Image (cartoon, rainbow, N blue to C red; front, side, top):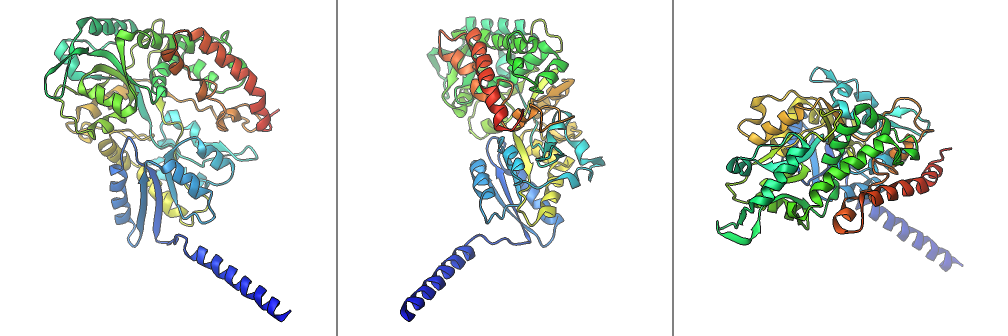
Length: 480
């Protein structure tokens, strides 16, 4: 019996030692080190590297451990669900932030929203189109700030300004002018020059190139056309996601989305107008090499193309204001990209105040201008950019001027006014619905690849699927 008892005690000691060893092998959470995980993709990391230098200078005695990685989404999910999470700040993309907030895994940021940054309250420095999205309901339906937006990206139609200049093409301001330009380019049969300057005889410049990897890039122009056709108020009402009847083709606003999609198909359904790339990089390199005159994309493309090291003197990137759709009621509407992006602090962080200081540096005018110059993009915060802020960079000047030419910018985030938890707005906030019903119902890929799949088929399918799924989505959220 004594031997058995001794064996049990020894086993317990060994188990405790193993557990202690596992714990001690975990990452050390130094109170003087701010741990940041940041997405490093299209906009790169140079901008945040510069902010880290300034932050350390402003906070003597503190260091920053920055994990800037293309795998930020996976890394965050792994860390935030672990028992030994030492992270203090997340800057990434994905609707997962909503579930993290709902599960209490993100810290409330309410206390800094009235803090002053560059003479404004932080909540007032957020761009108008994102001010609704800084609020999210807790389990009682009370609104809090768990996440701040990151980027207000500009999508739309990008073009090779050098090619336009060389061929005397005017930048189209209306949809009809855009269609006419497509025909002009197709008819011209301009040979595509190879990198050596020789001509590939069987290749001619196409009006557009697109990426097969990301059909959602088409949204940025289609949504803008939709808003032009439907008007600001109709879009606001639609994005409350009040009922599955929104997705009925008898709904005037939804019908306008169908019309906007038809405008897209008039171009991309014409084979002589387009060529494709298997990936984003493939399509963008074709564009930069001069195989197409235009591309539907987002402004991060500028930074990505700059990293390709393609020496093409005949390429100069520019973005046009989205040409006015026929019968547009509001031509000054722009859809901005970034509703799924977030800046957030995990609830487990023991350095929340330090992380909040970094956030305030990031969204300051200094941080905004750093992002413009190093990432070649625009943060989702008000900043008065001047000529000096982009120097001789013609694309940045073009980008800011084009953004400023729009009177109204919008996203798909619903207004947080009024009751939230017991309303169907929660269907969006839980990641169940978006403008298409769900992202899986986005019709572009099927319309491009199937000769028998029509716009009528696409929108009927969306309507039927949303009607079928709506009761389940509501039930899963405990909504009546």
